[in-house]
Length: 341
Image (cartoon, rainbow, N blue to C red; front, side, top):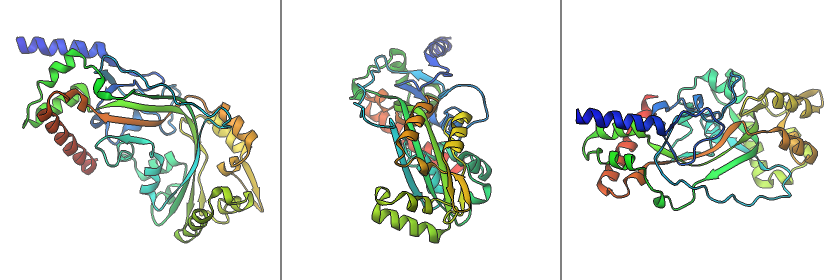
């Protein structure tokens, strides 16, 4: 009966302390269980367009494990910046690198390939849909360039050092139930309290477009841009490289949140007339201050753009042996996920 009473008390405490998030932002310092939805995290984190009408960014259940998570002071912003965010392109030799590039700003401690936590379950059809390209170009001998423009709206990070964070007393007591040599005790702890906590995040929205090339053309463009840099190329030269003359396929312009109004604006305002071709290209934004200013106001706070998760190691700061055992099981569990999903 004593054990049953403790379990009931812990469950009641968890109900009170759990955020079943349908809100706009991740919960800074909140604990999440990465393993429970490994390969399917795009279900609970809005990172690619979705076919729903609900307004949410992060709805992964989180648990308060720290008493005093404090956000670091915001970094100073460049008041003269036309776009308060980021505009960049990435060269990807294959589809794996393309997925990795899309999730470049998502880091999960002790996981070498965090992008797999989102994409391991994606079929070829799903990959094509999320990236805005035809399914025939999501496999085979193709190379890619990902062009993305992001507008940052909310940025939060925990104030260092993390060791100064105080644990909730109920959590601190549950750490005692992790038994060295007992695999199941770590799994139960992770199921109940999580594997990681939210260390930092950025929300906002972005537009992105994927250009598909043959390996030969891709190598030529990549070499040219590496030797000259985008800033040294003329507008006509950029339009040439990112046009149907060179690209085997030009993907649709999509927003990370799936905002159809912003996508329609892009199709209308970013249309390029190039010889016999007419198409929409994000490259039209390059150096166009009026268009960038318009986009800066159109991209709202609708998607998760960056996320850093760190393991719940601070919970074990007073238990070195248990910490080592926790790390070992976490590492093994990630290896199993990568093999089985």
